[in-house]
Amino acid sequence: MHVAVLGAGYAGVALTRRLESRLPPEADITLVNDREDHVLVHETHRAIRRPAIAEAISVPLDDLLDRAELVVDRVVDVDAEAGRAELADGDAIEWDYGAVCLGSETAYYGIEGLREHAIPLKSLDDAAAIREQFFEVVDDDGRVVVGGAGLSGVQVAGELAALAREEGAEVPDDVEIALVEQLEEVAPNFPSNFSRAVREQLEACGVDVETDTAVEKVFDDRIVTDAGDLGYDQLVWTGGIAGDDAVGGDRPVVRADLRLTERTFALGDAARVVDADGEPVPASASAAVREAKTVAENLGRLVDHELSASPDDFAPRLARYRFEVPGWLVSVGDGAVAQLGPTVLTGAAARASKAGVGAGYLTSVGAVRNAVELAEEELL
Image (tube, rainbow, N blue to C red):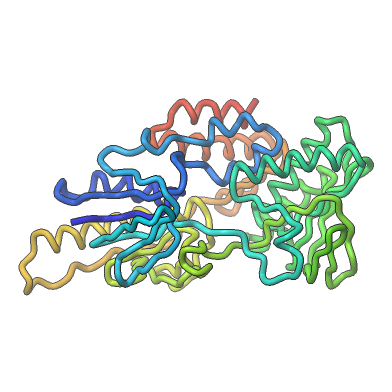
């Protein structure tokens, strides 16, 4: 019996670790990832201003795994029905049961010129590229445009404003930072009181928030929007997500049991999840980790049934995922906004909450040293 997990983001790591304790010894587990470490993607924006944080938010996968085999290679094609994935080196992984946890890529929506001229933020390499180019903008008293005011865009804009101040530049007097969003509010998929607090924090940092503004076309020095042209010296795009190239850029819809096919599941950003209440689940690290718990239980039930049941036994009933998170957090430069239940917090309490979540996650996967380093970076 072979169980394969494709991708070692939040969903893949959480699932693999749960499978190591949930599955019987006769089940082999393989984790496939394109790099040897697990990166806290929700903290990569911090590396724009503090490159040294990369060490705290990167954990070798070998340190996180017990019995699972790690295959370091890029998945280039997935056939979920056949239970097979092609790898970049020409090999293939086949499974009896599997899970697609390949995360997501940046969505460009077919906007002409956008892919060619914008830097995304999906990796530490992207953060380094944003940082390097931003110093040129600061030297020339230029303008940065961040496209997309979801949590990632908010955090990038906040980090750039803080970095400008650290370099002795005033925002917006010396360096302009504009955050452009096609919907009416920043953090548009979140409660209105949270969105208002985030906007207030951005404006306090000097960020020019341009909502209800859709990007239509991009040139090397200006963006064409439905509200007029906007010149720029640096463009960062965080405007949405698409599926991995290995699945054709698609994020398939899965229901509450997270089953993609009879023997393959999909979770995290790799899928568009509809939960047990029929509600769409927002793509987030917290949702991915919780979805992994449901998939681990379902894979465990299926593997146990196949290894021990007689052919006439009914297939096991699968668990169903219900989206429930205690709240939301976002950093805005040196500040933060936290929503816990109906209450919105800013200031020191929000910063402590933000630091605690990242450090708590690292502790939960056994990376205690990284947790301490991240908490120090966040709080000090």
